Length: 489
Image (cartoon, rainbow, N blue to C red):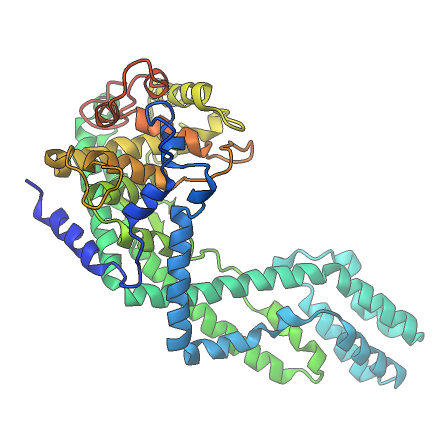
C-alpha cells in the first residue's frame, strides 16, 4: 500500500497540471519512442528517437510551456517589468558616434574642464575589475594633451571599440538573466504548490538516503557514519532558491536605482551608457533553466525542473524524473572525483572502479560519436548510478504492486514499471549523436541512460530482455553506493 504522503503528492501533481497543456508527459514520451529500436538492444535510442517526427523533445515542451507562462506574465506584470526593461537601451547602441562626437566638440572648443571631465568618466568606468579590460589600451586621460582633435577622436574611438564588444556581452547577459529571473520568480509565486511538491519529493529522497547510510557496509567499516549523516543533515534542499529569488529582486532594484541616479549625474547624454558598467553584473543563477546543481550544502532546483515536475503524471514518471534529479544532486555531497574531498574522509576505490567499469562497458556497446570514460567524470557517473538505485528503491517501495499495469491512455501499452526508465531517459533525449566532450565532466547522454538503466535488475524484467541482448551484455556488476546491498569496504 502506498504511503499517504506520496499518494497526496501524486494527486497534487495531477491537480496542478496547467490547463493549457494539451500534450501530456505520456504523449511526449511516446512521441520520442522509436518502435524500430528494441529497448533491450539500445534503450536510449529506443526512448530517444533520431526520427524527425520526434523533434519535439521533452525539454522543448518545457521550454514551450515556459514561454506560454512568460507571455502570461508579461501581460499581467508589465508595470512591474517596464521600469527595468527601459534600461535595456544599451543593447541597441550600435556605434560610438555620440561619444566620439561629444569628445571632439569639447576638444575643438578647447574647453579643458569639460574635456578632462569627459575623459575622467571614461577612465573610471573602464577600470572596473570585473570586466578585465586591457589597461594599457585604456589610458584616456593622455588624450587631453593632443591638440589634434581629429586624431585624438580617432584614438578614443579605437580605444573604446576594442573593448566595446565585452561591455555589450557582459551587460546583455546580466540583463537577460535578471529579466528571465523576474519571469521565473513570478512563475514560482503562481505555482507555489508545485514548489511544495518538489520539496516534498526532495524530503522523501533525503529521508531514504539517511535511512540507508547506517545500512552501508563500507560506511560502517570506515567509521564514517556520523560524518556522512551530518553531511546529509546539512543539505539544504530548495529553500535556498527562494533566498536566491529575494537576492535577484534586490539586485534588480539596486541596478535600477544605480542607473537612475547615475544617468542624472552625467552632463553628456552619450556618457550615460557608463552607468551600466557601474552595476554588479554577477547574476550567477538563471532560475528559468531546466537544470539543477549542488553547491554543498545548498541544492538548487531551477524553474525548468518545476515545470517538469508539474507535468509528470504518475509514480514512475515522477520518481524516474524529478526524484532522480533530486537524488543525483544530493549525491554530489557524498561522491567526489577527488577521494580527498574534505567532507568525506573515505570512499572505496573498488566502488569507484565498479562505477567506471559500467560506463566503460556501456561505451563499448553503444558508442555513437565519442564515448570515453575519464577519471574526471567519476563524480557525475557515480551520482548517476547513486540516483538510479536510490530513486528505484523509492519507486519499488511505492509502486511495486502496479509494475505490470498498463498506463491509461498509452498507445504503446507502456507499463508503470517501464515509465520509470522512460522518464529517466527523457531528460537526456537528443537527435544528435551522443558524445562525451573532453572538457566536460558529464558523460555522453546515451551512456548515462543505458549505464544507469542496465544497473537495475527490473529493467530486464520490465522489457523482457534475454541475456544475449546488448543492454544485458553491457551490464556489469551492480554498484550499490549506499544501502544494504553495498558490498564494498
